[in-house]
Image 1: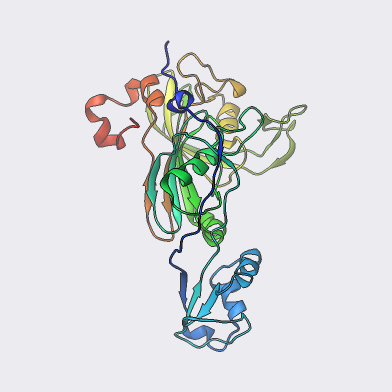
Image 2: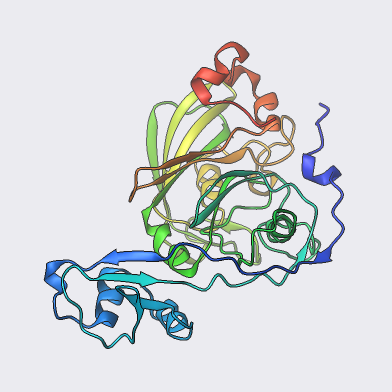
Length: 327
């Protein structure tokens, strides 16, 4: 079955050094409640605002990085109820070769960039992928858009051939604080027939003799707890479309857990799946919910995903049911 090449593989991507300039962004603001009257600012920041020790140290080294009611202060000052604390986090910079690769931005604000990662693109450079990673695409995008200096701060990772939502933080506070409020939903197509919904709770560890493959069971090396919840959305007798959420974020977790119950991902030959229908693992980070704000981000389905399993996404009701597809 002929497959269309992924867009990024045919894109021109000469590497080049990225030079950017800093731009100002709105500060992080916190209103001091009555129960923090008289407390030290450093205690308020660490315990109430959730500022990490590392981030606080960087703020203290930044001129005007910490302000109280508009005035730069030291963190040993005592607070009064109604005070306004402002933090001006340094944006950092990205010292990585930029490449003219697709960087599909779905949403952006002062704290986040939401991207739809293509298949075949690792998040970070690796052997054999020195200049075609999401980091390189990000560096190239910074130069093209002239958005100012930013460090590359992904809130999580996706495997090279997994598509979908990637959230990038624009400052260290967001990078450290937001992940605990994120709930991601993945869509996947597995081999075999699953109905209803269920939970897979199997510790995952390295497979003996391998530095890449993971496994479950007694043979797993240094296993750690892993929990995956799944729900069947559609099926055709040989494959099942699933929605999955994770309680843990282990390497290859969805891929290993589905293989462990005899239903490997379609296309995932590393864990026993067949590449007959699709040439990569059929796994897509579909949705991310911010539990702190209720905001939901959604990534369109990639074309190869939909073309491989047309029976799951009838053209006439695809837009209404599933929210569209990637062009």
